[in-house]
Length: 312
Image (cartoon, rainbow, N blue to C red; front, side, top):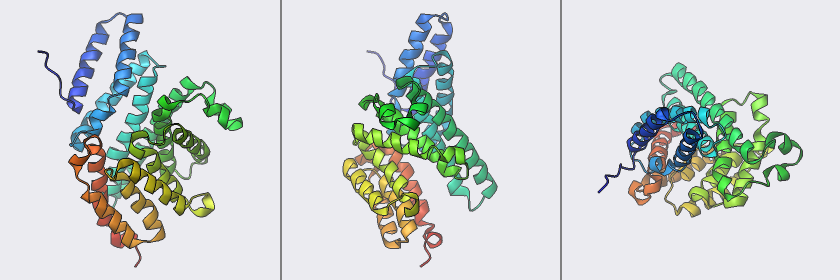
């Protein structure tokens, strides 16, 4: 009987290391490219391994190796859509969960380090954006130029299978804008970010248990009304995200509390939602284990800052 590697980050990277070793032995020809392409497709489908892990520190330590391996493979197969998606989602998640979040947590005690981490997070988001745009261009060549003149035509070729790419590209782009609000060239891409998410919602609103609506909570609730934001639309997205997750994801609860309740100074709802997030049992949603652990860490941190976030 053949032993099966455990579904863990170390298992993934052990398999990846074997593949990289094998690729190094293959001649630089179509056989090698075929192997790279197969690995790229496998990597694009491996996110569930990380999502179900219960050790964020282990995942955070393992991800850099995996991301650099993906970049190395992309150098050999630059048009591989699986690798481009893996790079886009991987760099975005690593930047938020293990770089930007650390900056938030240490800002009160080490401002200089926090600033440095946010600068690094921005660079990582921009790198993720680059891979995402490359992936989008593989589906729709000339996408960026066409989007300016005919958005519907630019987005028409995308199907349900492209939702993950649309989402992660928008997430990386939106996160970069949020960290560099004074950059007009970057902020000019906000309509594109919205267009990507709107198209993703049209194609598969239920994607990943409602994560598209998590994005809309922040997008609608994080902008003032004068800038096109809407608390009511953010609340609608929140309700939908909770429904689609069956109440088993902490992220929408934390996002709404941090983005909307702080803005409207609703201290009571803020605490209520964060308490609900902390009450979610990690083992009730194994496929959301890592996300829930990270969201609960943030919920605990936010509760500790209530007196700073609310004036009453």
